[in-house]
Image (cartoon, rainbow, N blue to C red):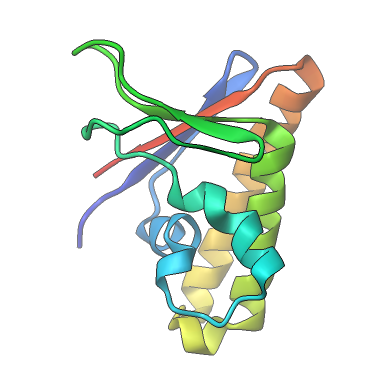
Length: 141
């Protein structure tokens, strides 16, 4: 098994998710192959844009988010998003996972773990939103 760390942060606080199921079933939810409503797919498109910290990314953007490429060798690409936009994506991912747990292949233990991690990330987003900050998200494996 490989380790993935998804980092979410702003000047108001940070959190690093070290859960492979979180990466597999939340960050890469669009790759699971579930039949999603177009509105759900639109809500989670931000999650598929989260860049790997060790890979140079092109600048991409969507509604309430953009990928900012690394500016130097000491830097890494990040997804910059409004806390509200990322919160909506995580809430949609949570709902979709609970509705489609069996087809997604997620175990009961994994879905509980993912749910707890989403709560922790939502707390970081709430602090950022209250302080008026955007959030940066990246992952490394």
